[in-house]
Length: 108
Length: 123
Image 1: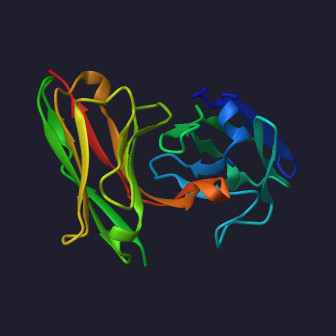
Image 2 (image 1 turned 90 degrees about the vertical axis):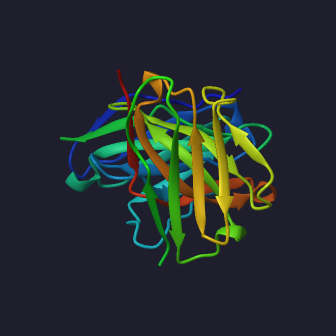
C-alpha cells in the first residue's frame, strides 16, 4: 500500500496526554517519522526511528509502533504544542516517500 | 550548521516551465539523498521527488512524473527541480529537505528543511 492515514483533527486539554496515530501497510517495514509544522513555518522532525528525538525536542514527545500503526504521544501537552503533525515513511521499495494527511492538534 | 535555501519560485502561467534551486551549506551534498516536498495552500505535505546519494537514482511522485526532473550539482552544492507543463494543481510551497536513514535500519527521515519557496500557477 502507498498510503498513510491520520485523523484530521485531535484535541487535548492543557497538561493532558494525547496520542496521534498513523496507519499504513508500509509501517510494517519502516519506522514512521513525525514532523511538527506551525503556520508559516517549515516542518520540523520531532520523532524518528523506534523512538528517537533530535536534540532540542522536549521529552514529553514520544513515539511507538505496533503492526501497521505508529503513534506520537504527547505527555502533558502544552499550549505551544498546538500545530499540525505529519507522519512519514517509505513505500515497500524504500525509494518513494509517503506522508500522512496530517493531524491538526488543538490544545484546549 | 546545515542550511537549505530555496529560490526560483514565482508566478507562472499554466503550461510554463520553472526551475527551483536549493542552495545547501554546512554539509557535503554528495553524501546525502535529497528530496523536494511541496504543500498546496491549506493542504498537507506531498513528496515530489528524491535523488539518492549516488546522484543517479531518482524517484518521482506519480503526480509529477514525466513533467518534473530532480538534479544536483555537487560542485555548486545545489539541488534543482526542473518543472514543466505546470498546472494550477502544482501551486504550492516547495521545500527541499535532507534525507537521512537506511533501509537496513528500517529508518528514513528528513532532518533538515529549507524555508520553502512559493510557486503559483495561474492564468
